[in-house]
Image (cartoon, rainbow, N blue to C red):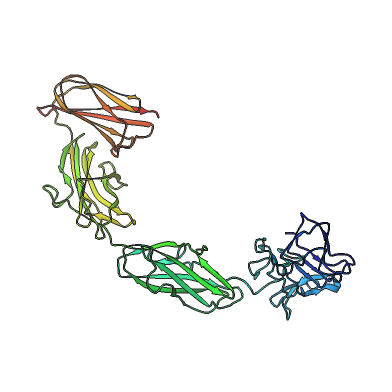
Amino acid sequence: GNQCTNTGGEGAGIFASSGATIRNCIIAFNGPGGGIFAYPDAPVVRFCDVYNNEGGDYRNMADRTGLNGNIRANPLFASGATGDYHLKSQYGRSDPATKTWVKDTVTSPCINAGDPGSPYSKEPAPNGGRVNMGRYANTAQASKSDHQPPLLYWPGGSGYTSDGVQPDQAPPGSNFTFKVRYRHYGNKAPSWVRLYLWKPNGSPVGGSPFTMTAAGSSWSAGVVFAKSLSLDAHGQYCYAIETRADTWTVRLPPSETGKIPGPVVNRLPVLTWDGRAGYVSDGLEPHSQVLYEDVVFRVKYADPDGDPPASVDTLFWEPSDPDGDPWEAGMYKEGTSTDYQHGVPYYRKVFCTEVGVHHYAFQAQDQWGATARLPATGKMNGPTVTGSSGASLALTSVVAQQMGNAAVVTYTLGGEAEVQATVLNLAGRIIAEIPAGRQEAGVRNLRWNGRNQAGNLVPAGLYLVCVSARAPDGASAQAICPLVLRR
């Protein structure tokens, strides 16, 4: 803005024409020329104090008092006669003579009267959250004010650093405690601090807004307000917190219609053994397998609220790293049931690439992030993987080549056998299984569509194709070749 203070002149305080904008100015005590002299057309005047100018406050233009934030009031300079145009304030005025802050018995009407859209961050606190008029507007010498907005912010401490509720998630009937910190640099108490709360379906909770209770009265230092409520409706609630002090209403979030997500009323999902033959007391069949063959994991996911899972995974530890981080294999829903309250089965085939005792566990997460694990801690034993049967079966000349978005695997089979091919990433995790079946001896090939188990095209990169074959007499063979995909 073009803040200024014009006083005591013989001519006009400001000589201006159309195209000019006069903003955040004090134009007072000028002589016969008046306050603002317009020629040939009137300027725009916004948020100015035009006062007691001898030749008239507005010359050759319409009076703008009461329009666009303009006022006509004694600005209460510290000492206009000696050129000290700091504004008097009961809350602090910079005194250039003593280089200290002093307090007056009156406060200038030009404090916190500037354009609300103008910057004010350079004014010392308390500054009212709005720029002053005059020479020292938005400077370190701006006079202070007690007319300022209160502050609302999260109280900090356990669970309250980034929002205002704890716990973030709990079962129906649990108590949730909402907290906020109120602060006023002028040490003024709030008229109220209220909690607005909406159910998961968007309707207000009965009794909302709720009055929050203060834990103290040191308003300038900050006081925590709290409200505890028992919540029952399943899903995610939303809330907002509002306060009022003086003429200021402040809200978290700032928008009048904004809402903050949380908390969630939710019961934990549950994982249990599948229950069918071989899966009554654990989640694996077979428990013993030969190298480069599959085992099948099964588990049942249930949620008392009927929520579908965000994920169900098999955690798999290989013999070479039994105490390290497991690799996670996403499981697939078996069948079409959506009765999650009573349980839906999930399965995953895993290709055994190491000899020795493996370990496993299951974990799941619902749509709210609540987790389940089976077993609750630790891990289950199995499968135990041994070497191949030792019988002879030739599987040679295995090559995999990209064909468009797909790939073709070519190999030579020494005799009739059941053939299976699996695509792995470099970590040994299964990306896809290539349909095969019983094949006769000779040069054979399999086609892979380049998609993973979820049906999505896999990204470019280096993959491994593992082809395994088992003859009717039990003889088996296995070979691995690289596959480079470019997209």
